[in-house]
Length: 68
Image 1 (cartoon, rainbow, N blue to C red):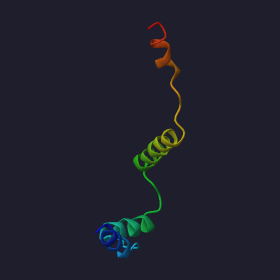
Image 2: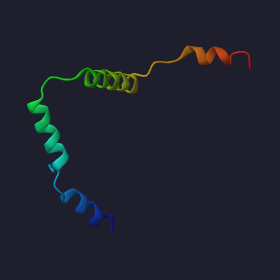
Image 3: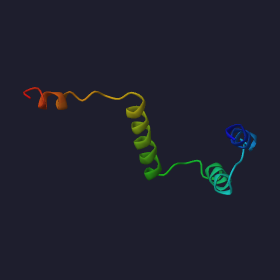
C-alpha cells in the first residue's frame, strides 16, 4: 500500500508552476525596482531566516531561574 502511494507522489511532476507563480514572476520582471515596503519585508524575512538558522542563546532567562 505504502509503496503504491510513494509511487504516486514520486511520479507527479516536480516542475509544476501555478498561474499565480507565473503572474508574480512576470510582474517581477516588468517591475524590477522594489518599493520601500517590499525592501522592509525582505529585510524582516532575512532576519527571521538568520535567527532560525543561527539561534541566539538568551542569557537573561537563565539568570531569572538561578535562585530556584
